[in-house]
Length: 175
Image (cartoon, rainbow, N blue to C red; front, side, top):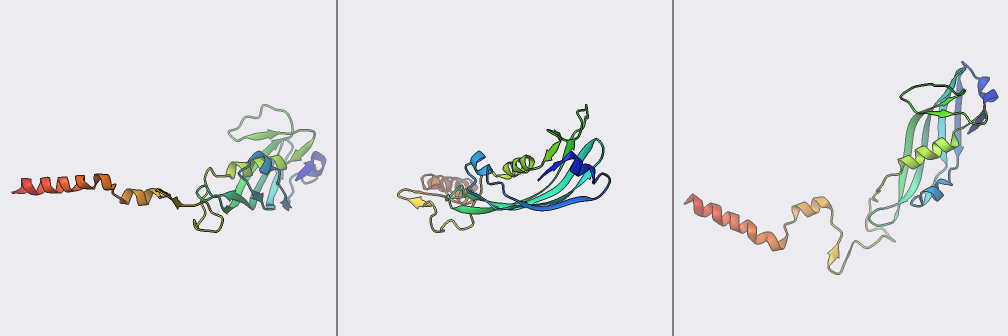
């Protein structure tokens, strides 16, 4: 996904669209939690004028990440729409948007795409089936994994007697 300025200037004030499949396997070295990366589908268009090139594109694919609870593979979909602007000349262009400076009369979207995908990796991802083959154990001798909602419903047996104390206290004050 690399174009020279002369290639892009041919499309100034015209429709420039692209639809490509790319490989970004090198992000596995940047983030070791990524186990596998599917081919990434990039589709979009570019608006080209004399001072900048603005790309409007969509990134689709999926990553294989470890489940935070069981360490089994989880298929995590990537579906991002973004707009990236490249300035063609050094200028004091001020905007709220982040812009990229042009290097070597060439625009390369690949590093931007890799960065966007890395930003999409969640801190935690969970699989649907905690009892799948190869999963980390969910219980053992004197321990088990419990969800927070299950924990809030359970009453600690050491404190169960306190509930009776308040029931007894309310019934004696009513008489």
